[in-house]
Image 1 (tube, rainbow, N blue to C red):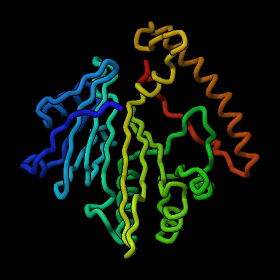
Image 2: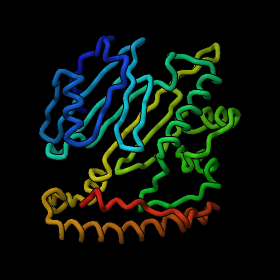
Image 3: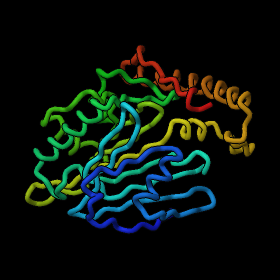
Image 4: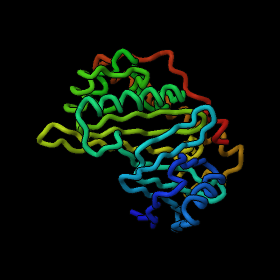
Length: 279
C-alpha cells in the first residue's frame, strides 16, 4: 500500500528516446537521471517511479543483455529495492496494449501478436516454478481456459482463438510467467472495458523481478527470522538444496494431480540454472 510520489514527465526531447532501465545499482542511477532523484524510502523498501500521461505515453527499454525488451504505451513504472546494496530488484510497468485507449477487436489482436513476437524474438521463455506441474505445450489452450495462464508463449493464437479466449477466460485476462538471463517476468494482458459500439480497452502489466530476489525471498525463513542476505555461503547453499527437495516433492504431487485431470506432463523441461544468481 505504499504510494510513491512521482512527477508527470512532460513531453520533452527525452520522450523521443526509450527510457533505458537496468536492474541492480545502475537501476538507481537510471531512475535518478529521469526523475530528478525522487525516491520514496520506507523501512522495508525504497520506491522510485516514472509517470507518463496520454497522448505522450512512454517507451521503456528493460536492459537485459541479449534479452533486452522494449515496451510501448507506458503509463507508469515503479522500481523497487528491498536491499539497498542490491539496487533495483523489481520493476513494475503498466502500459496500454495499443496507443489508443479504445480499439476494434482486430487492432487489439494485431497488438497482441506484435507483443508476442517481440517477447519471442527477445528470447523470453516459459518458466515453471520448481514446485508446480510442468504441463505440456499440447495442453496450452485447455490449461489457459482453465487457469488463465499461458504455458507456451511461442504459440500465437489465431484471431478466432484470441477472441474466444479473452472473452471467456476468468477476469478477461491472460497471464505469462517468463524468464531470461536472471530476470523473471510475470506479464498479464487484460481486457478492462468494452463499449457499446464494440470497441475494447486493454491494460498490459509487466512485473519484473531479479531471480536472485525471487529465489532468496522464497528461501527466507521468517519463522526463525533468518534473512538469506545475512547467511554464510554454506548456509545459503544448504537452504537452497533443502528448497530443491521440497519443491521436487510438491511438483510430483502436483503432476500426479494434473495427470488425473487428463493433462500431459512436459518431461523435457529443464529448470534454468538460477543458483549462479542466488549465491
